[in-house]
Length: 165
Image (tube, rainbow, N blue to C red):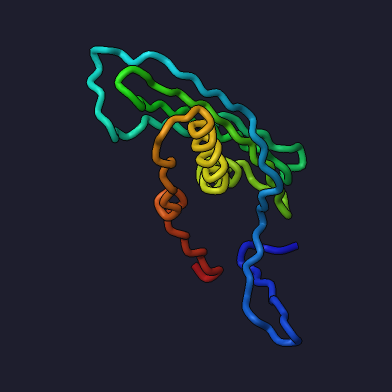
């Protein structure tokens, strides 16, 4: 059984090339759970501003944990609303479900932290890609959704206490 601090050695032609970290939790698969794109008329009273940022609402919609606490799924969804012309608004809803596995049973506290932080970082590129593809298929010009600042989402790594403390 490995821990988060373990390092695996990568050998090349009989010598160690580098240390590669091993991880307790692995992303096993990702599937599209929901896709929906719709156009609607813009409110004429609303001022149209070309280049205005879209409204993006993203978060964990649901999660499931196996009885042995080593397998779990996280459903990350987003709703994207963008006024792309004077007359029309597009709303795109997309959810992706990530399946994860752990080398050991995880605690409820660790699961709650993982689903709100690391799962967002791991699943966001899939949501981002799906929303961009749907907009392209609807022939709507828009900039891709932003990248995540992983350091802001996950935060600094806390130092572990030594046994002397």
